[in-house]
Amino acid sequence: MKLYSALINNNEEILVGFGEGNDANLLKDLGMDFADMNDLICHMTEEQKQGLYEMAEIGINEKVYNIDEVHLLAPIVRPRQDVICLGINYDEHAKEAGMYSEEAFGGERPYTIYFSKRVNRATGPKEDIPSYQGLVDSLDYESELGVILKKDVKNIAKEEALDAVFGYTVINDVSARNLQTRHKQWYVGKSLDGFTPIGPCIVTADEIEDVQNLNIQSYVNGELRQNSNTKYMIQSVAGAIAELSLGMTLQAGTIIATGTPAGVGMGMKPPCFLNVGDVVVCEIEKIGKIENRIS
Image 1: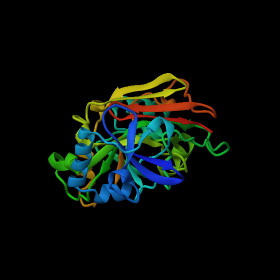
Image 2: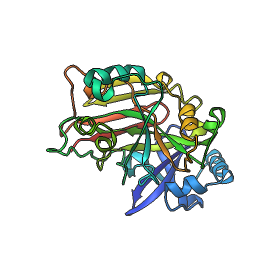
Image 3: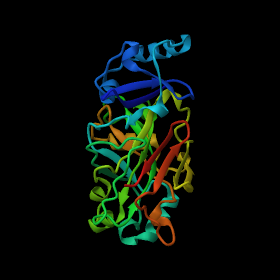
Image 4: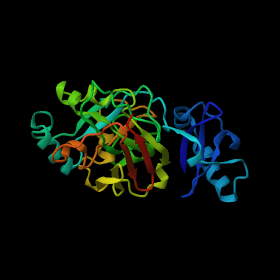
């Protein structure tokens, strides 16, 4: 099942789609009316979810929307809390980051790096990313798998962690490298307004057979930049959820960005950062892609 947030008749609405096509139904047309995606994640029952699958099997006759013809928003427009991010979670990205700045990204990492990213409003899958000329001189992209939790968890075992996942999405962890390195931590350089494109949807966890075997790419102006697979993560999705929940409650709706593979702009020789007019595509197998222009 794919769940979208879209602007329809000037209202934020939830659309649901099944299979590989672009057709989706307005959720409230199917008898389910949630205020937004956070409300759905926190309150949708298993019976309601199963009911949607049963409707899909027999055929839904309500009005159908083509997702390519509506204004898609980020699936979760306003996250309940800061997005939790994993840093340097692919070996090859660790190498390229260390070559760019040993002081900021080098050194031994016996434990997973976690940081947070402020997101007042997530950027939609086709909305612009602001360039902040005069403030940012090294704008970069990072294609990442996003994980959304469906329930509160604390001290959860690794073996049970994936049972707490509602679904998965695509995130571009946009980064201002000059701010990220200047402040000796990553919060400011990751958290400017518009720096978190998410989408195009949330694919429910039951649709992903193996989250540690998904191809992940990014393109800039059609040029392939990142090309990897989630199997190369240093810390797994289940491991991250279990470790983060040790002594800390992770609420339903929590978004976790699981790190990016090699191929970002700062890793190129010489570094190749984003400019106004560039178009960045981030894509993950079985989920979809987001495409954002730099403005």
